[in-house]
Length: 443
Image 1 (cartoon, rainbow, N blue to C red):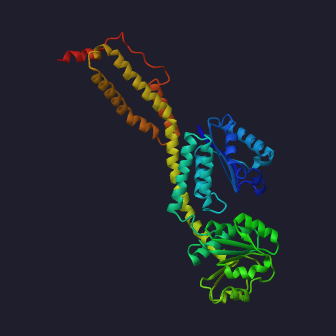
Image 2 (image 1 turned 120 degrees about the vertical axis):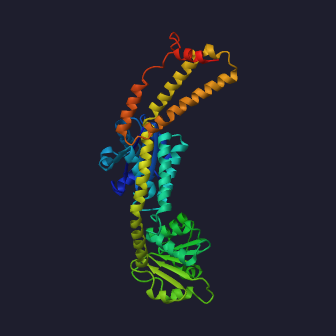
Image 3 (image 1 turned 60 degrees about the horizontal axis):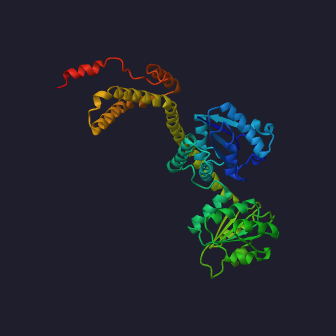
């Protein structure tokens, strides 16, 4: 079996094509089961995110497998193959493992170091494993990828720091308040960036999300998506007074939160600060609001500078992360090479054991008088001798540094010990010279 990968990603395909080939919006388990029915796919995993759709296969017929995978993508998604063929990429063997390791480490992501990707890789493998679509090769490869991702996160700072405006906003909120559990949030506007920020805040355990928008419909939709509550636009000022965090991102051409609004929200009874995140362009909040003692105001430029600083920090970690991936790939390649020697190793051990058993059978008449425990001990000792004799040669054979050398040595072992022939027959008719010589010295 050989590892084979076929897919599309943000590096090879536009977003509209990635959407058409996406598996994540459907049942991933059903997809991998459908893929596993292809005759040349001995093991299968489907990895699908917003930026990639990748099929990982264990196969003995790579060319046939490629054709079947193309047909599978076209049939499953009802997309003409000519539409996506120019955007496909394929890798085999160590190159496929290298790609998976980089994906798990966050090095192949649209935003380098994104934290979600390792979990998505694990989910993809578990979906396949639960449906018995995986086997020894993919299990070992994906387990190795999980370890690579964990090493990169623990030994580098690749995943540290917010690298999106919405992440940066949440990171700032956590700096100001510490834990966000129990905090109340007001979201002004219901666009995409408001939605992302609200979702990130919800994932950090805020107690309440209140959403308001000039048009009620989008606010109600966002409220249902985030487990929040929509309120009329006219209640915005009152909601500010109850909020700890205000996120605003509307399309207004003039400030909608004035100094007077902020002062009213931070009245005499307020103890905790008010954190306002103005993500709008033009700005939704009057800049003079930042002069109020209890208010922390950050605008889009503040957040972008944090994002750029964190991106620069991540870039400095890329070389270290790539070195970890390269180191693990060397070890993985060595493991793959050792697997190619396994049939010869198994055959060699079988041949030696056949010889051992044949010799014991030939000496049956001499051993018959021994008690059962002594005969069992002779069987055990001869088996251990064979194992010790073969331990070093088989380990060396599996550890040879390259495929060409390993192929030469494997062929030599096969020829020397006639491993392609059938089992040796006991030479019962030949005189047992060694046994005769030994008997002369027996007391």
